[in-house]
Amino acid sequence: MELRIAKVNNDDLIVRPILKDFYCRYCCSVSKCMTRPHRSGFCVVFEVVLGNKRWLVIDGFGESERGFVISEFTDDWKMTYTGMSGAQRFYSYRLNLYHHITCGGWHRYVPLPCIIALDEKLERKLEELKQVDRYQITTSDLPVIMKLLRSNIIRKYKIFEDVDINEVEFYFEFADLLPLLKAYKRSRKLKFSQNASLVELPNCFTSVFRLKDIEFKIPKKANYLEFVFQDQVRINLTKDLFIVYKYDRVQDKAIVYVVDKMNSCFIVTGYEQYQNVLHRPISLSMHRERSFVEKILDVFFDYRLGDVLFIPLDKPIFSEVIEYFMPARAQQFGKMIIKNAEIVDNDILRPKSDGSIEVFHPEHGVLKLEPTTDYKCLTFTTMHD
Image (tube, rainbow, N blue to C red):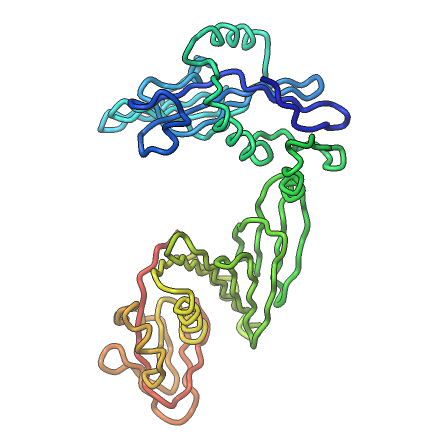
């Protein structure tokens, strides 16, 4: 079987699926197993030809109790780990691949795909393996093989890294891959309000967001919609993936929150830098609707100083979010300097006069509050990177 994917600088890019390996205790083919919750595994070996270049790509997923055909391509496995349970891990420098064997005897290879230069020795090995029945590709394997190929040919097979996109012309059957390739090759720098920027990296689907020394990766998108309201900036990436940030020039303080939905749970990741102090990211998970997550973000922007929230008792927001937080601990106030207010009853911030309240922390800056009500001092449990 031979697949002509595209013309690259007038040379045909040809991919040939030449070997497969499938394992399941119960199913005889991967096509049947894909719809069943079985512990199983599948891998395929592609021969890739472009001009005078030839190499192998081994791709797949899952596990096997007898190993995969992958182990046939090298003998340089070196043991790197033995667990108390009996699990073992090996590493191949030639394949740049780990081979993990569980205590129950299941074999797993990571990270796939792996790419190997094709030489004469390897060609002879391939001819031997093609004679083994279990490695031969059947018609029922083709839907899964094509799905793997189309999913990873742009992103993982490293075929287009050194190719000018203007030199690529896809054949009709693969023409829908062109927008994906354009995104993969695209490289640009976008500027947003308050000196934030976003850099799209070439030859991948990754962008890097930066504000001061805060930096993190997000997926590339065709459009980054920016909305500025009051002193906050929002960048919408998808319906349930967005960035909200704020930069205080007076304090030289930057705060960024990234919200992403995973299944029914919103993950909020927070970043903060005060002057030269760059804090570790924090992460909170919320099994609530998006409108509630928006309220939590407002609370963080308006009432957070480090790991302490000062929430006004006379605001409706207090009763809405109280269940998500716990009373602050006495040691959390150790570095704080409080002006025109005092801590009473361990977790209540009470104004002393009609003047503005200022709470200062040497690592988080100043939080200003109105002196019109008492504030409940709360804290939150987070996962730190």
